[in-house]
Image 1 (spheres, one colour):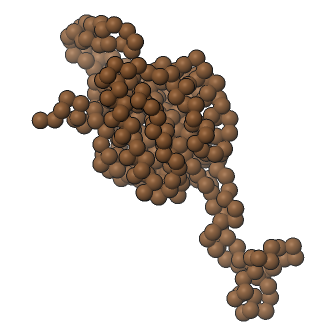
Image 2 (cartoon, helix red, strand yellow; image 1 turned 120 degrees about the vertical axis):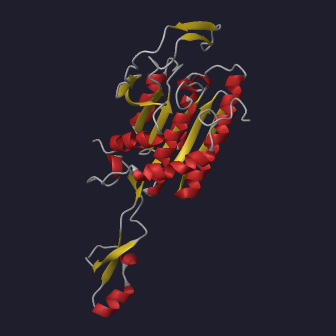
Image 3 (cartoon, helix red, strand yellow; image 1 turned 60 degrees about the horizontal axis):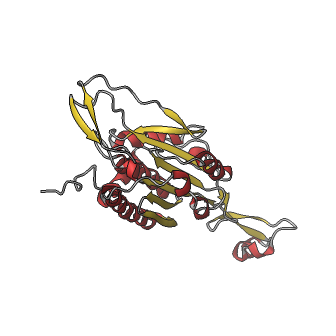
Length: 298
C-alpha cells in the first residue's frame, strides 16, 4: 500500500518529469521567423565555434582568421567564417512553499508547477539553451546553475524532486509560507543580463515588495510568470470539508453540491505583471500545447 503522501499527484517523481520530454517536443509548432523560438532576447557569444565557410580577404580583416588551405589553393587570401551562436539561458523558479501543497483534481499545485517547468526546460535544452533552477520552499532554496544538454536537465529534475520532498515535509510540520519577494532575492545573481526567468507559482503570500522585486528581475532579463491554480467551483461534492488556512485556525467548509465549474481566465495580473494562468487539473499534454502557443506569441 502506498503511503498517504506518496501517490502520483502528491509526491514528485523524477521519472515522470523525465517522461515529459516527449510531450514538450510533440507540442512544438513550426518555427517562427526569429533567431530563437519565443523571440527571447539573447546575447551573442563571440563569433561562434562552428565554421560556416570562407570568403576573400578584405583589408582590415583579422589575419588570425586566414584559411591557409583555401588561400594556397586559390592563390588569394581567404578568411574562415563562423556561424554566430546565441546563448539562451533560463532560470526555472519553482514555488514549493506550503501554500502549493494542495489540490482537488489531478495533482497538487506544487506537482503541476514542477511539470510546467520540466516542459519549459526540456524544450529549452532541445533548442540548444541552458537551464538552471531556483526551487523555493519553507525548508530553504535549492539551486542549480544553468547547464546545457540532457545531463543539465536531469540535474535540474533531481534538484526539483529533492526540493519538493523537503517542502512537503516542512508543510506537514506546520511551516508557513516565507514571503515570495524575500525568497526571490537571489534570483538575479544566478543568471546574467539577457537571460530568461520563468517563475511558476500560486503567488500566495507575495510580500510587500513583490512588485519591486519582479520589476528589478525584468529590467535586464525576460521575465515570464505562470500562475498555477485550480478552477474549484463545482468540482467538490456536497459535504463538510475541514481546512486549515495558512497561519490561521482550522475551519470547516459546508458545500451544498456540485455545480458548473467556472473557467479560469487566460491571463492574470500579478503585482503589475501579466501571468499565464494554468489549471493544475489539466493533463501535461494540454499544458505543453498551451506553453508552445504562448512561446510563439509576439
